Length: 224
Image (cartoon, rainbow, N blue to C red):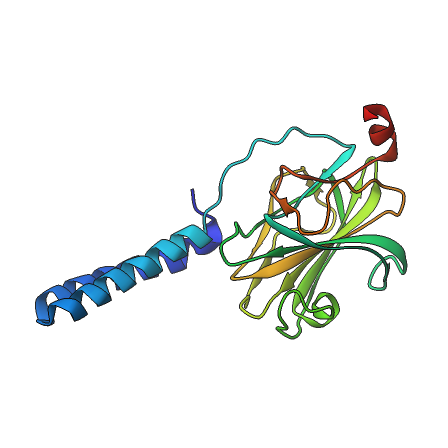
């Protein structure tokens, strides 16, 4: 299953690869060069298909948990001042996505979209400390039943040149549903209430719509 944002590039790449294979087969007599072109074009197609894959994931809806919005690795867990929307202290959890990760963004929680805004910007490497505020990005705030308002931010990286955000203010969304896509390497930042529990650790690999990023204190106490 492939994401809809990749349909045009997948189809275009497929026809280009077919053309390269056929042209090289009939017009290039040097065997090693013909094979090189054919294999290289097929590798490119496989990489494109791999990048735009969109695995379906069954979500067990839980108002007491915030699920990871993307696949990747946790690179930041810290308390910060969030200055775009909350203007107060928040727990920031940042997830870096390499080009080999699934790049679908999924809603971390069910609720109502309170804020959705696109910001043009730079293309610093996604792990740069200022990428969250200086890079091209989108900011989305969801009002959730148990956590109140939470914010997630899609951040473009050095390779990412397009951020797709489906969140619209006023709409109701469901945990795990498709929220957008970031093309070719990026990160997602979450800004959460200070009193929530963070079960993930730095450098931990997480799976979108599967890994619990945060839990309510009452749930953690119940599990304990």
